Length: 299
Length: 147
Image (cartoon, rainbow over all chains, first blue to last red; front, side):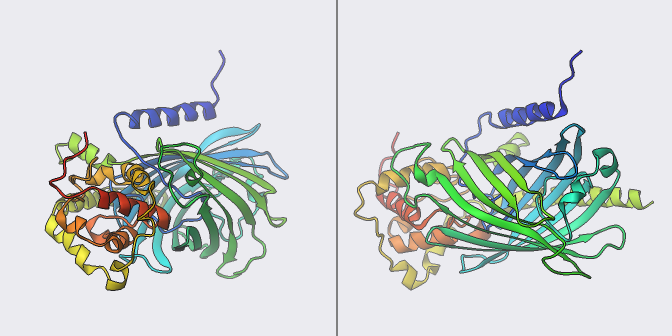
């Protein structure tokens, strides 16, 4: 009997989740194009955004892979957004595996807009060493880390607390964001690790057109991001780690779907030579009040 | 031993996370519909910002574009015709209709984060002015709602 590849099964699972959630739920979308960098905008209160992302990477000294993750991003309040990530990966000619989960929270620190807007980010992650989504580059993360077969990599586990300070500014349609990060492994005596992500982006048009349209220029946001490691506590710096430069583009459809694409290029010999990230997401506004109404709460 | 401590810690963290979300929903639903205090935010806008003019006031397409933006981003909380909802106050109220364009623009830009209104500076400045054009076109609560 012919078996269905795991990645195919996961795909159907994600599509089914999108279809189930879309029943009777209105929505909207105005998403940034970044994959790694965060700006200071949080999810609208009560809205749920379901996102599927993929990271296809070339691998020297090993097999190319596609890593993917599903995000459930919920606006708990206007100043707090919380997210659950489920990660997996397929290494070509090797295997497809689930690699762990992450719980992420972002807290807006100031109550109104300023020139620079800080948001505090804290994440707990419980993932195996086979995790390859590369959602952040930290410490001395290098390409060769991903060359080992999955059967060996998945035996190692990481329990980490990760913190970021998200600094972001929007002027004349341009968004500038810088995210320094620090990670502390919760087991063993491993040191603090550091990394960064930075991005700039702008919609292709600033005024909205009067008609609903899919291909209007204001629906497209383009930019570029750069991210990499900064070593660890004993050896801080830009060396012996990897760095990437990646153009990004997002297409916000009126139907509330958002599509994102980003080819990424390694900037040194420690980096993967090429990454291709893509993602699809849909926002379900009013999700919180609808769920509350199922349990007798007010809509 | 270490593994069970980690699993236990992760379970505790997950439980605290879920409790936090539920508590946030409870607080935010209690915070809904205090219109008078929400409208009081209009008076807190800095005078310089309140005095700004809408640069798209004469743009014949601004109201139509603002209508589209309102449906996409605002109707969920403020109602399909801006008549108000469980989460957001009516924008047809006299307090809003009598506010200056600059006041509405400032509130859109900065939100009222502690009371559940998010910042909308993610929308480019011209789109926020288009929204202001739409809100000011609504008329007050005596104006009939569109069907």
